[in-house]
Length: 367
Ligand code: NAD
Image (cartoon, rainbow, N blue to C red):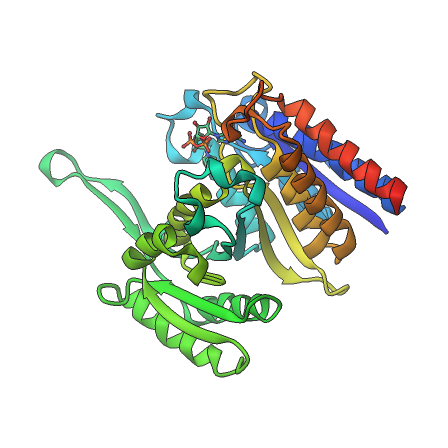
């Protein structure tokens, strides 16, 4: 297979972790006999520096042409007080919209080797394995009207949370179909005791569930879900929710995995003729300015995102499994970055990337 990938390293540790992810991708392609064409583009702060635009036209064109896009992270402190359209994060919203990737999948798996890294009790975390399906192109982050107007005591900020039936239906179908391949349980999270958008959300998800008799559905208010995620995470299989709730809950769920640096994500849109998904893949974490440029960042979330890309955009399930097993072997070996609190001296970002490649090479040789 020929894999045409766009790499957007972005800002801060995005550059460091995508370097390792690319190494792993090249290893997998070679080991499994695929050819790889990699193009590179700018997004976020790096794109503002070069083009004055967080999502330049050139990047849009490259993303639309590629089979799949792998992104590091965006965000630079120097833009913290810039107007919204000149902030790196606008680039993220722009590329998600341009690719039409409406579903963000955030798997949270608790590796045995990392149990001690979670601040939660081992018995709560061990065996937890959930998938958060976050709606990505609607809701409060995109709704209009939005903005800040007026002055003095009348100065007002406005954002709008809005969802159409069609937007809710497509994300609900995605959640049920993903649950069919897992433990067949969907929890839909909303705030229907207060918000009309949530009342519609709950009604439409319930209607869609009638088409999936093999999957059970329950509904949960977002405040209760925030509590259950840390009190009883094993009760969840697939969690489907709107954009902002999903943003917050998935960061909370990161504590289960031991570090935010561990978590991959896949943002999926429509299906291509081949049956594979249009996809944007990125670790869940941000650009981490506090550790950027120090070769300290954990690259496993970015490397896990390569696995997700192989699985969803190319249907290469065996290759995706190989990446996941290699990550697990590295965790067991203890050669991990400082965020995972190793017993010995921490490994650097590039050492962890090399260790994953070495684990892949050993498996390929013994296959
Ligand atoms: P962050 O995820 O960048 O960092 C939060 C904390 O986690 C920091 O202490 C950081 O050092 C640590 N951390 C994050 N990733 C790590 C990794 N791979 N290895 C080890 N430690 C890691 O979140 P933040 O500090 O709130 O945001 C920093 C910038 O990133 C902001 O500009 C924000 O807007 C942006 N951001 C971007 C994305 C994205 O590109 N998808 C997501 C979140 C935040």
